Length: 424
Ligand code: AMP
Ligand code: GLY
Image 1 (cartoon, rainbow, N blue to C red):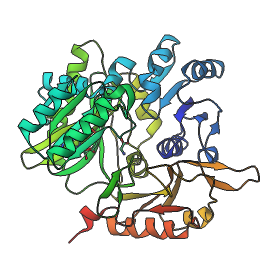
Image 2 (image 1 turned 90 degrees about the vertical axis):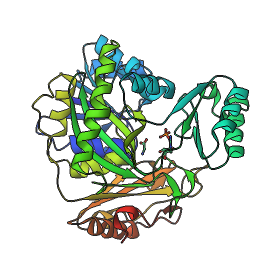
Image 3 (image 1 turned 180 degrees about the vertical axis):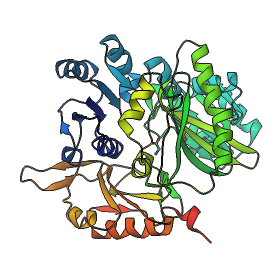
């Protein structure tokens, strides 16, 4: 199997790392990849959103499978272009990727499928949105409808904060066209879980759950980020809850997408809130989470490539996925300034020492090689330092021992990843 992974972050490093171990693999490329990915795959200098050039490459190299890491190439039609060229693509068509591209679409599909979620209303006009907020009261959630790099959601503690969010999103257009429409949602309370299911259009196979840490600071304070660390499995997400989520959220959504003529193939990422009245849907993503993917790949015992092929070929019925019982944790190291403007170009040392910590694995996210060969920071989230252990505490200790072996004065991390599961 000749495989091309699209993307260049920590998630794609984890995917390449897992694919590299597959007995089915004969050649692995990653576009554009990064210096860590280059240790397990051949990096190709093509942007993850340049669909025509990705297709040219896949055809010229007789690629058997294209694996989409991020959502952007999918919403731009990577899977559709691959299908037209007769190349398998792991990831949904542009139509099915609307489950991530438009929050209003997601809520409509979820309602049609009877999926439990927050009460919501959609507004195309700021005055009406603000009037509704005043009528509902706080806390309340304001969301830009379109893709806003994970920054389009404001969980407002007061009515004034919510009205301000509407003004910024709809009037000042801080997220551009993504803010033409807003959703105002009921604020769900509970523990947040990222759950992943492989889908082949009709069959959904549960993968595993993880818990992300979206706020930048210890104790879950400060602005939202793409995710500062994750662990799997989260003890709050029992097998009974998993079965309930498959039956009430994942399978009904898959059925509804098929009914609409846009079957979903790929990995469905359900962002869930475990509320006092059961698990509720916050949002769908049409890809693996980053950094959740890193801990999933650390725990996956089955052949990832075989699983992705089965999803592409409509062959997930009877497919068996096996997982390590041992927990895994990933701690994200980010460049100073993140999630604002990160400082680029600071030198990173000590990754060999970090990788020598028993159970540890270093994933590159935003790194680059300087002309003199030194490894430097080249993004917001720069490294994902992961580890497994017999217990979550062991995984945490190993991950932070590896973090402490990294010599990077220009970076920072949260020190409390896993706190919900480790408290008490
Ligand atoms: P999203 O981009 O939809 O994942 O939202 C970003 C974050 O906002 C989520 O991870 C939740 O922490 C929070 N959030 C979104 N919707 C709600 C809601 N209805 N109630 C409470 N928190 C929410
Ligand atoms: N870590 C959350 C996400 O990938 O959307």
